[in-house]
Length: 379
Image 1 (cartoon, rainbow, N blue to C red):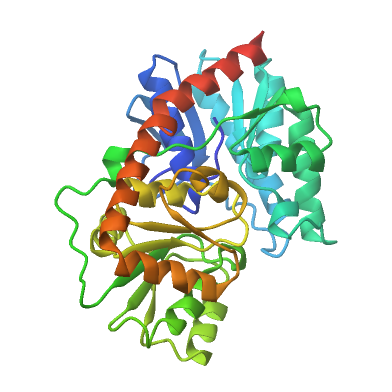
Image 2: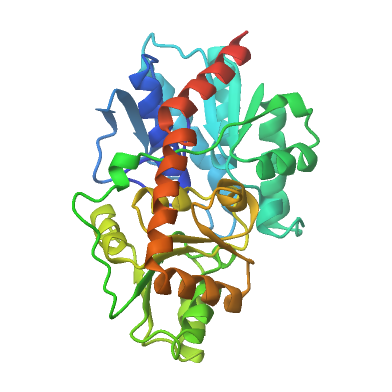
């Protein structure tokens, strides 16, 4: 597998997906090696939960940061060099996760004579509301198109994403396979009892701080609840390029006393927040799947998600979480208030969420489905 991020290097949801999939494949008896990026908390060649993880330093040669496509193409050479450490070991399948590793994936399939499988976690077209602006977005879109063309099989995490990939890259439908993301329930389940504060309800959200993640909508909703729910407060955790603008919007809207931008938090700190949360909100404007929604439900916190993309597919018809119209702060405020004011209904919702996760989103089932795609690609 090739992935730009792998724990402890975590940028977005891809790291959790690749780790969960790799560990489960290894647990099922498959021989798994992950190529990823160097991290100071991990060795450059290490075994973790049965998975061999090779890491490359990709920051040389230095290239201008405003040309991410050129930088990624250059960095992929360092990923390919990791193949020299494999000795006589040869993979039967090369699995590339997203466009950032497209060049390495294509090179390694030729080097090893092994089929390339590509997982598309999101698309540049989707991130821009169905458009492909000129410049860098067009270059990234072209790389995504090329990766899906070169791959023998393509995986997408939701029906929403299957439609986006098939239509956007003009692929035959039978080339694209729907396999959802998963969640390690034990990792997110609290070791003790949850302890939300009824006197000062806490709303929690986290993820990459980008415009399309919709955190600005959550801040608007919290402002609307100031006079309706005494003591309400909100913590948004994460880093990203939209962080300065989000802070500016919070300040201009006068909700800085209610909404805290926590920046990066460790897994332990995040689980502590979730234990105290009266409500978790996933406010995305665009979301191909939404691993954070699975993680929120696995933590047994009442969850509210935007009715968009893969988030809607996870929740619709299950009563495992509440839905609101994406971008609608007033509608989100009503859903948050509903959760906080109706604790019995919220508890029942959490029970249904636990049943849903166990039935549909275990990593064992997802690894099995992925292995079948591998076998078809080899055949």
